Length: 182
Image 1 (cartoon, rainbow, N blue to C red):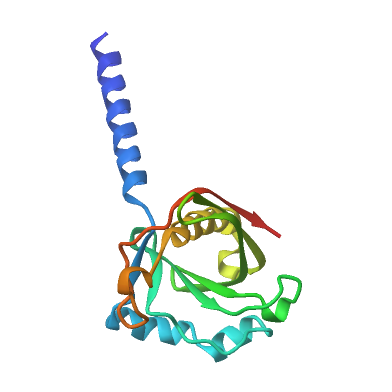
Image 2 (image 1 turned 180 degrees about the vertical axis):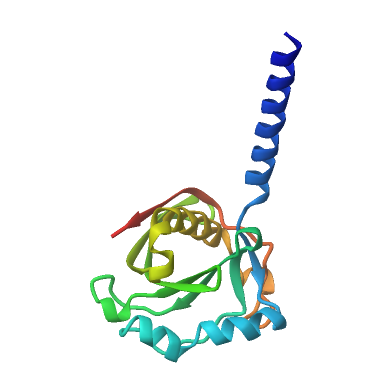
């Protein structure tokens, strides 16, 4: 009987540890530090991204990103514009995962507003995963869901936030969020 109790306690402890680890792994919006900026600029620049996706437009890396440092995952919105039917003009984003750059287009659609709350759907198009990460494609999609959801809450220009000094604490009023992979 004592053996069963000991096994159950060990199991319970392992479950609690797993829950704590999962809770601590979360994306957050933050300003990109100067130190991080240096390595990001080496991975995410026009020449490197153009080699992956021929339709990429000229872009500037923003001063903020959505990051989960424990999982070594970094989402950066590169912008763009135009119709979601025009592949060459859709907004681009990248997810840096374990030092590899995943490129995709993301179109944000929604209803509502900041007062009543927004219902947001992000459509991910043309997900380009490096071959070394291809076996992790489904896990990458889950990471993208989490990162894009946190990104949806980001209001970098609220309450006086600027490009150089974004507001990383203001939150959007989001009622629902989902991602569709096209």
